[in-house]
Length: 92
Image (cartoon, rainbow, N blue to C red; front, side, top):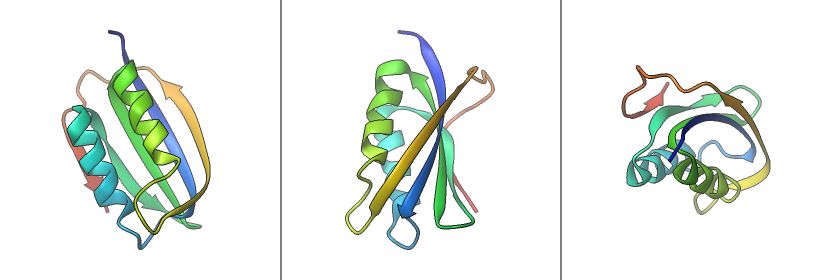
């Protein structure tokens, strides 16, 4: 399976609803590398790297997010995988 890297920008009510912690749980359960962090203007950035099917699964989850989230938009850009990327982190 091809390894891919996706950067998702998630907009809506995605801060203060455990979005980052839930994203980490999803990424860890799928065996993905990357990170998630809050951005200004009520946005979250999530970077997922791993097998394409697992990355697609994480991206699909981002459209709903955890209970309490109200996702209005998810935009995705694709980048070259980073061989140095290990594990999944919450960035502050």
